[in-house]
Picture 1 (cartoon, helix red, strand yellow):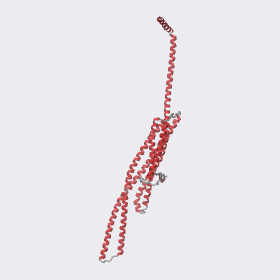
Picture 2 (tube, one colour):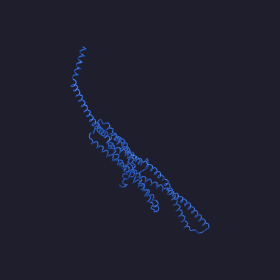
Picture 3 (cartoon, helix red, strand yellow):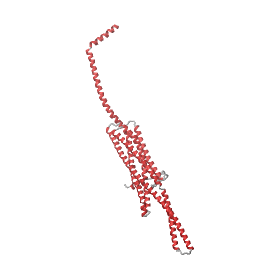
Picture 4 (cartoon, one colour):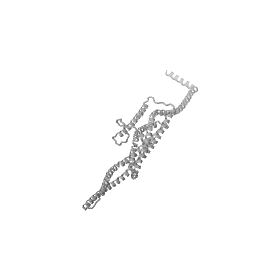
Length: 418
């Protein structure tokens, strides 16, 4: 797809003001204008979608926590299938994050190229401004010289009339007309140079834009890198949790993933708005190119060729590289947000599943150990009971006389007491 197609796609997005009226798609830097209102409406719409999805996730989590009878999974295949599915989604989100990083780098290169071209344009405009000052001084001096020459010719004409010398009035009048015309043209040139000098002084906005643009781009690039690295770290934790079926890791992944989900959708709102206005420099390039070509002079065209090249580089950086980068970031971030939403909706069901699975695995091992110990204890107890029984029988058979003697002693003692 050509850059103009990307630009037309994002530029032709519907723009609506706060009064729900259609707004023109032409860029307008007025902060109180309708175009900025339409961008704010676009950001608010994305934030509303973010709030709706966030409310859905919170409701699903609360409902899952309030279940009276949690989900019981007795089949190990179901647990493995669920963990494998979530693992695949986590790996895909990692790849999408790599695409976001690629788009961020592409956008950074385009914006840096545009800023460098803007700095070059400002430097050349300063050179032209100094040259126009010199040209203005030259024109002022030329005006003074023409006035001096005109006064001298008039004085010479009066002297010749006084001395009654012949003078060619036709040539004299033609010279006066030519000098008056030149003086008029020089005056018009001075007015044009002054107006041009005023515009040249206003070019300081290019320097300010390049300074603030470089700062903002550096902060934006750093923030995006940190956000993507944190997201990748959280996804690695999710991959570990789903591969090892660890309930604690899954709970930590869910909490951090929820925060990243909110940040991603906030980022989507900003990316869509920035992508829509990322191509406004195309209008500047077209106007500047038409203005440069309208001079029609070879010398002027050669002198202004450097401006045309810098402006083309600004267009190339902003409307080609930066627009491609922002488009890749926007599409990847939207898909990433949808996949995070699906993962966060499925994760609550795994809390009970993985806990039951862990408990089942641990209890089964404990059952095996306790069963072996119980069988050993039962065997020892039965052996002991049999030994005691044999001892009792042996005692009854081997020592009957002693038992009878003891019984006789008891009877004798009872008689004596009587």
